[in-house]
Amino acid sequence: MNLMFEITKQIPRDLITTKTVNDKDCFNEHSDINRFITNPINSLMLIKRFVQIWPDVLNYSVVPQNTRINKFIEKFQFGKNDLTGAYEALYRIQDFYQLEAHDLKTGIFSKEWMLVAEKWSPVPKFMGADDMLEIGIIAYKENDYQSANMWLKTALDEINNNESYSDESSMITVLDYLSWSE
Image (cartoon, rainbow, N blue to C red; front, side, top):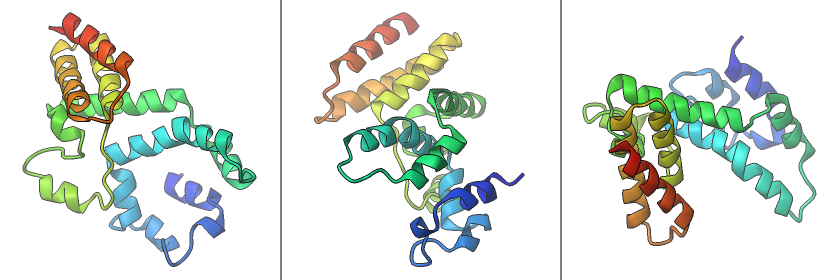
């Protein structure tokens, strides 16, 4: 079964117009949409949107809810387990290929592949401190303290360098896990 084909069949037609995405591009591995979706960081961010952001949009929307989009989400049943699985997958990629967390947060999988990563991710999404914290906790629970330390320090740097970041509980959690992982 071709998952891209199944998902494409479920997307309401008025959301995909020839002005934005050519239907045939969904099946071309070199198309922008396929390149976007096959980047693990972008995939994580899409799942995060469906699980965390979309329900908030629906709750606060003053416009009548789009039932076709809701049916699409219900059919594929994106949930917290999917988001956790996406975080675990990124941890496994980082661990297997011995990648640096500070590079992965921006979608760069190695210095040698930097140009390819930029070319193959037309609209890059970047992980935030909370995302890196989640991966750090996964590494910690796997007793991989070196990876946990790397992810948690990158999360801490992100928190310290982002003036608009105001979640003190995440800062405390990062520092707590860092103290136990060193």
